[in-house]
Length: 516
Image (cartoon, rainbow, N blue to C red; front, side):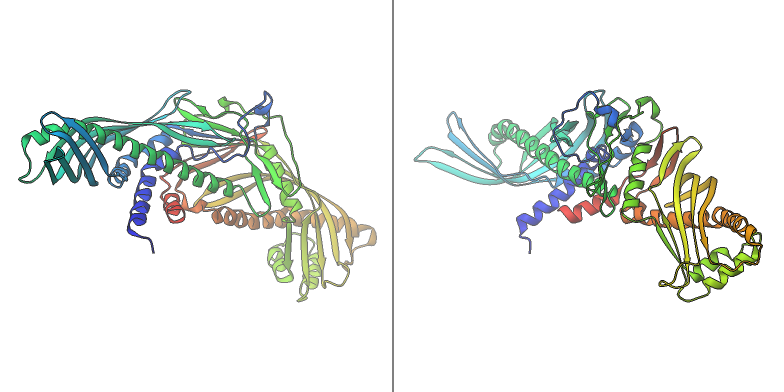
């Protein structure tokens, strides 16, 4: 059971986390990295992934600021304030402010600005609030001492300014919000009750107000910085997890310092494969800032080397294997009315066995090349039809396949569109009974297999890849995001993913559940 102070602290941290979400999420794509921030001149050539977040994204995130910053003020942890002061005719005056609470909060507006080569500047204007508590005071000398307690209320109005710099610490981009300050336009003290002599209000107004200003600035800005970095760590951990599947991961070390421009923020990452003891290097990055625009909220630039290395890892992890039962194979080929019907019926006959199994697997790692027409995938595949696991295969063949595929994302599903394909059949071994002349068997079977792979085999693989990849992305929580009009655009040697998005409430809720 959480005791009262701990519970209050948890609530304050939750509310402050809410208020800092726009500050930290602006840096959300600047991912966790692991070593010192020192870069050699060749580092930019190793860039495999680039993330750019533009001014429109910052404006959308800032829409939430005016609503949630109120919670940060209202639940900020304000400690008791104690002090003393020598006053003529009264001697030493001691005072203490206890049970300090902030209420009746209102915010006029909030603004965000990306400052060139500097910081993300967030200004919360005219934060009006009422600060209430108990004032305990005493005065006099060693032989006469007067002590009193009275309720107080302070009407305040302030501007909050946060300059969020993208700092590089331990090869990691962090949100440095230490440049944070409050500018008070009004701080008026009211004392309640019959024990409110006018001289007391005049006496305490100046030095209590001054002390309270310092405490408010210290506490609010300190908690903003602490929670900002806690939230930044959480977001970066989630981003790293999104690029991980089982033993397969991506090294996202920075290749250069973060870039802050007036219209966008940008970071460059290696994008190197992390898979067991496999090491893949590439150092011929073609990225240039001119390749990305500033019209959409979020951009990701991927080198084809990154996709190639992921395909290699998937091959080594034996993920390119497809098993079909006899029933599934018959369902795939049932609409084939153009191929050699004798061969087809022979396959159907072999596939009718309950133990029949068709296995499709990659013989070599697929090679990926990105072109303006789409993603060019070159693969060498083997296909084997067996009626029993213990018997020799009834049909075995290999095929070299070149496919051109375009990808899109809509209705929270990944779509793969086949643009073109080239199929070459080789190394056919068959025990199928075909009545054709012996010298014509090979040509007839090759022609049949070529058409079957092109018309039914490739579409079947794509149909199974789409939900598998969608499921993988959804397991990382992608379906929870409000992604608006995403585009996947291929170019020569790289592709760009660009999109707009809505405020990611679910990430904040998840953060509060796990971290607070």
